[in-house]
Length: 252
Image 1 (cartoon, rainbow, N blue to C red):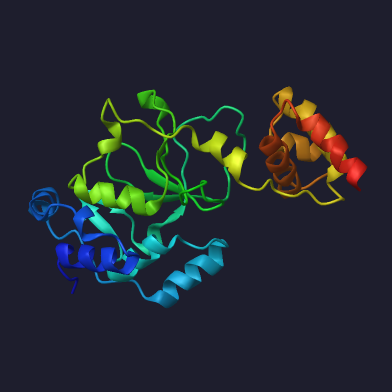
Image 2: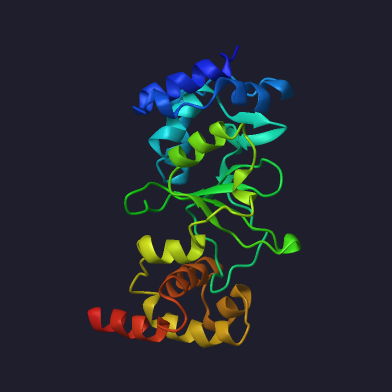
């Protein structure tokens, strides 16, 4: 049986060395969470978390790992934080300029109500942690936005706000676009010598509107090969891709 939310929050804060004066108001926690049912679940097995990290190839931030071991998810109508079994690759709901293939490091963290909340596990922001961002929604005219500079920052504010989606407040200052930040801070995906000569052939086909299946058929490659090339090209950006390809040839 899960322990009370307030007790788990105190444990989480003590584990992370967070000052008690930053704790959410108990009355806010009660009004925001407890009136809607039990927000917590029994903690996840640390071995299951390690298996998730091994399967996906990314390590979770320490604060998220600690919370999942205390409560496998966090609920308020919908899951603010998914249980471990439901944390998986992000499902896109908004088109992102200059992005063709979604980064493998983008994971859906929760689905509170209006939009999914996601995390990029490929990098840490300078002076912060793994960024938390919204998926965006084309139907609502809402682009993806970074809403916190780390899981810990987002989670603590979420608790202080009683679980509401405070990042949709009109005055909320976001931290920019997740794809632009990813390209700026995450290491670019490498491209093996075998595929590098094809990169300059893929680029004009992409600009002409060909999809991965068409490109693979034209160049005698597998769709996996084409995806690797596209990941490489989109990270450096279409404007600089030809120079990047030439630089790669010179390097080899």
